[in-house]
Length: 84
Length: 247
Image (cartoon, rainbow over the protein chains, first blue to last red):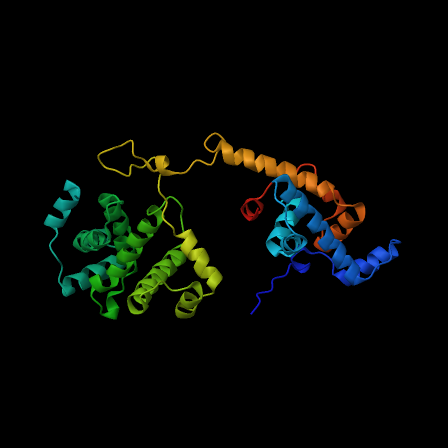
């Protein structure tokens, strides 16, 4: 059985994707919850890709996405962004 | 070793019979200080016997005897001969209590409350029994079920009662240079410059990577993970061990 792991917004006192979509729509950037989720993932993919390239590694899109989705990676980046 | 004075006092005062104890206690109740003194001095043997049981190398025996004597004095003052018990039966609990209190206060550099120390001994005994029966260490949950205390309290008690050791203490009796301090790993930059440089480089790369996020991506990630605008640490963020291990 596939062992699925998720990063939850509650752990970081953040917002759910529906709330983010509402907020962004109110701020003038119309989007739905899936778009919000895709944008988060895209941001993490950018970070993974740049780190990999800096170390001379060339990962395919699947691998980049897998790393970007992993809770360990996201937790580490978030804790850095929070300055912990 | 006990002091000469104490040894002489013991020699001079033989054990009392139950009848003598009763009479002295009665006199003491009427305010006779000599009777009180006699009752105390005649029971120093009991103090010595209990102190010997509790004595460990880390305590001064003479101090332990002195502290235990305080228990004896309390017992003498509170003894009620009309209840018909032998004095030693009553006094031994007071002496033990004083001895244990002294041990508790002097066993470690950090003072731990008596109830915590008692719970710790209970947990240790349970752990030993469990290991004998099951052939493995019990988990915190198993300990919690047996001792009937919360897992949090068990963890806290075990942590609070850990023994401390001086970094200067010698590991080898023959070689005083072989101290515990020499065995502690040094994590400073000078010992492992390669790792420190790697960490610096990674720090720089991540900082650059975070700059690649578009304003929209950055805003949504901030909202998603509860990072407020005033907590912008992109410029000067630390690299955590977790991050280092992952990458």
